[in-house]
Length: 285
Image 1 (tube, rainbow, N blue to C red):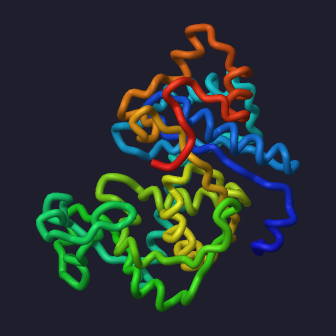
Image 2 (image 1 turned 90 degrees about the vertical axis):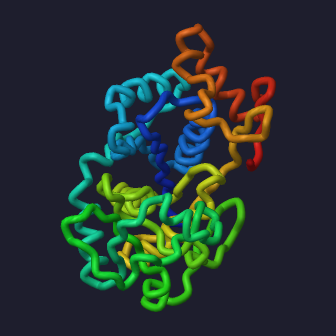
């Protein structure tokens, strides 16, 4: 399906939480936005559980997520889990290996930091230490995308965000990103791109903190011959310090609010209206 066909068809959106912690108010806002965009456009809202985060994934949280969304009054049309799609990740990685577009990397984060690399939009830019090296095949290795070689194959690319407009894809700013981790079947970049295509997502709705990642995802779509959706990167809920709400900072969970007797339907309506709790604001960190 072409981008123009996506523009005229009913929107398919998704909410894709990872079961490594409870959902919080920021997740609620993202789910409400994705749900409402689909419903307003006569489309479908999908729930995807991104459960390939190694030992951090807690399968029991998926049921908790269902209860949270139901409490908010959100209904989804389909649910899937990344753990059921491991074969598709392996197939895509194998294809890129055969085309000479990825290479193995055994570097640790400490080794990368020691090389004093530049800082990019997604953290430290890999200095290319393992590119062209002969490595012990028995040693655990990640797979990195050779960005320069990939760009030579696909040429100039663009993508469209409903809030920011037309964007020229610039994946070079990331350096050679990891597509397959040493201890996981796929990185976020590879898994999310493949999953959105498999689910028929036509409007990728997610937080503004993932805006830059779209440059990589657009490149992967071109390399793998995947459909090109549109994107909608919404603002984030920020705490009193201006940082986004996050599981690791122990932001109050939806389950705690639910168990305390708060009205989930009313909360969802307040989020829609931008009526946020004290100390919470909407913006970019």
